[in-house]
Structures are given as C-alpha cells and as structure tokens.
Length: 249
Image (cartoon, rainbow, N blue to C red; front, side, top):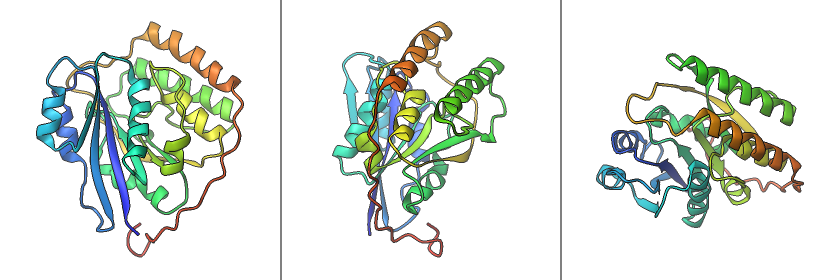
C-alpha cells in the first residue's frame, strides 16, 4: 500500500536556512512512500518563499501577515490533510532539527504502533543548547508530564509526525505557539505518542521568535485553557500497514 507523506515547514523570515532544510529532506528512502514538501510562510518579509521554491518545495501557502507559530502549524496540519497525506511531518525551517532523520520519525506510525511521534533532543543530543533554553524546556516538559501523568522528555520539540487521524483531530488553541497544547490535546483524546531520539544542532542563522515574557504570558494560559476543555476519546482506526521489519519499516 502506498503512503503519502507531506513534510511541512512553518517559516517566518528563514531565507538563510530553509533551502538547506528542504534539500536535506529524504524523498526516496522507500519505494512505497511518496514525499512532498509544504511550506507555510508566516508573513515573511525576506526571500523565504523564493528560496523555498528554488530548493524544491512542492506547495507553498502564505499568510499575508505574521500570525504566529501556532497558527502556522495549525495550517500545516490542515493543508496536509486536505492534500491527502497519510502521514504529515512538521520540522522547523531553522535547520536545528535533522531533516535526514525523518524516516526514523515516521517509522512507528508506518508500523501502526503509534499515531503521533516527537523528535526528542533529550533522548538524542542537546550539545550546544543554551542553558536558559534547556531550563525552560525542562520546566515546561515537566509540567506537561504532570498534567498527562506520563513522562515526556522533550515537550518543546520542533520535529513531529502525525497519522491522518491525528492530523484531522489535532487542535491548537492559540496562535503564538503549539508545542505544549498540541501534545496535551492529542494525548487526552487517546492518540498514542512516542518520542524518537534525534540529533540536535544549534541554530547558526536567523533569530528565534521566542521571547521569554511573551512565551510565559501566552503558553501558561493556553495550557490552562486546554486542560479545562473536555475531549471525547477518538476511536483509533488501525491502518492496514504493509511495511514490516523485514522491509525496514
């Protein structure tokens, strides 16, 4: 059975790095898998779109104005579903995450083991991560672990994969960010999650959108709002997987 994979990149003013990320995305790692690249341009004012097109992006969806990372990820999931993806992969456009490790990220979903995977820097490598970012990650990840009553190692990862059902039912309730509320939303709805070790590298170009005050005043209220919502458990429909360990998936 063929599997359509769409890799989407939320991007805001990432002309210096997005081309390298797109070129590193594996396109032909298994004959039964078709990989397409979707860029969600979050109101960039530089050459992000032009660079993405030249580097091989298959689809580009642009916001007229900058709406926020949460809005971009929400749109990436929606568009991936509309485009017929069986699996969607989100990866940041800043080249901090290993695009060449996408096959490892989607493998548990292809095998039917889980519905949602997160690339974990803390199970892989975090060399070079600044102390304040590491401490912030520890804090918010620990908070998610308490709320979900299960241990999570890297709740802020910018590399994730979703089954078709996870794409369809995922909700991101604020535009600023997505990381914490998305995991809370999917796990509380009954979707199976697994963390995959990945190789992390420090951003060398561009600037992070994260500002401490805005992050604290936006993320906390959103987490409270998400936990206050009542969700019905989603009935997970098992996919008829043809990929087995003998074939590598």
